[in-house]
Length: 86
Image 1: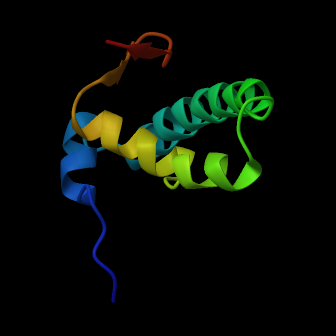
Image 2: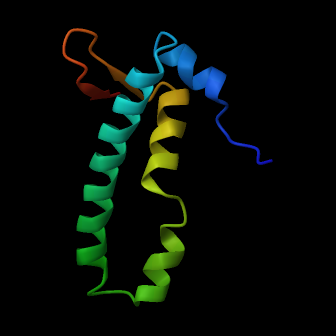
């Protein structure tokens, strides 16, 4: 058994208890984060070693997305399901 933070109940509360909406919101945000990290990595690799970059990105994009949803840093537009950053 593992302990997951943030708790699924908290995440579902942020998406009107719709697990499919939560999945969609988290995957879209994780995709954006992954694109951002990849771009940062390309620029940083010129200045740092790969080991230093790997240490800096110890959390996975989906974990970051779930944390942002729980903190309400990310929400959605109910009409279009577009991700909004606050």
